[in-house]
Length: 132
Image (cartoon, rainbow, N blue to C red; front, top):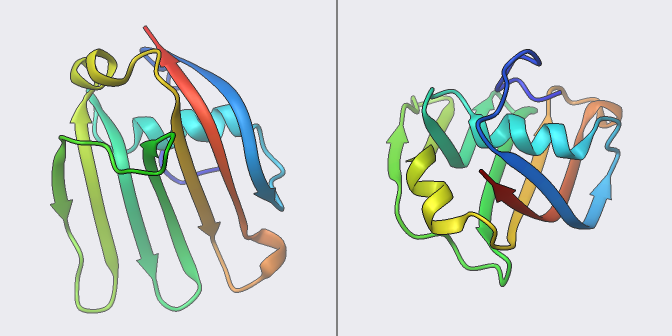
């Protein structure tokens, strides 16, 4: 499960998976993982991009794109990286996100590597929609 959100948090929108394009070593519910990454770490915002890295093997990243693979327009970049660690985000207010992208097909790519143990790493790419 993603380190971004507790399981108790209720999303202010619904996520529908259209198609899972590829997945590797995923043991959890992909829909729940997508919601976790969308809600990210900032209340009232959707996370369009995140990249957290600690050391050589601990890495969490995701990117939300249009279905054709182009990046979403809008949002605010936050970079809390240090010399040794990466902590980058692109966020957008939930209301703006739903207005611009609600009902449209979007693509998400997720990669999680909580350790150097490949059995604990996973990734997937999926097409999904969000609804109010």
